[in-house]
Image 1 (cartoon, helix red, strand yellow):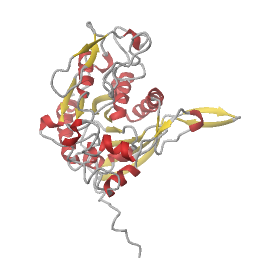
Image 2 (image 1 turned 30 degrees about the vertical axis):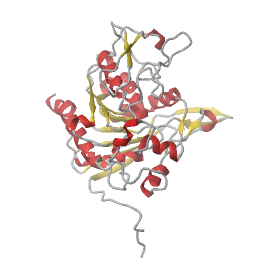
Image 3 (image 1 turned 180 degrees about the vertical axis):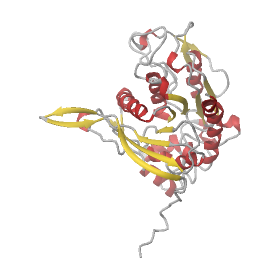
Length: 366
């Protein structure tokens, strides 16, 4: 009789009542008289044993990742998907277009990028990272270095990504909109590279987004995280929309990011970098103005010095965005991949309390 090797980790699936798979979006193209489909997004849906929440969660992974990062922890235990199912959430998990189980067409796409084991460890897992606060990173299991079995299993799951940020966002914009139109109103939980996905999907379909949790979203607005300097064109104007490389709906309207007038703002406290905000009167983001939004950061991540500015930009634009560093609510020692770490369930529980207070309880009152 077959047996499971002891080194392969499994966990019960009793939180799941039903599970399904489908593709959202996609566009056809013709080549040599034949027709093909591209840009479709793979989606898994999980139905809990006891569905109690008014709105489902859509879990959007970041760069180098696939939807797997929401499925399990670094040590092979149940991940956030199972945790949210046990709280009564319907959960959708995606692989963004051209990643994982979403089809790629290399001959039609731009350059791809993959990071080495050493580079990945330096930003995600080790306490000897390039950023000074990495010494506080205590929640990653094992050494976080290549050669450690837990790290090596994590690195094996890293996926190559499209290099061009705008190309990535344009693909997700179309397929993500199709997903929301299929499933109806939902809460977007977006990690890292997926942070901008939440902003532009909510901007496109505000009636279909009931809340946003942005976990260490791409940023800071307008600025290189490596240099702290403004990313600008030859005329000194910003090259992107601050929180997105694809257009957003501003009021008053703009035809391009160069029309956003910025000012440099000193860091409000030690440990944060300086940032850029709009000059007053600031243009607003009216389509995001009614969506409860959380920007969440861990204390030891390379994001810790600058995620504050993403929330500040949103607040200045009229978005009800709250900024929380996990250390300020008593959750210590986490890095960028917090959903995989030793205390992942503690963070998920805190998120559920935030969502209950700011999103789900209001839905029940309507």
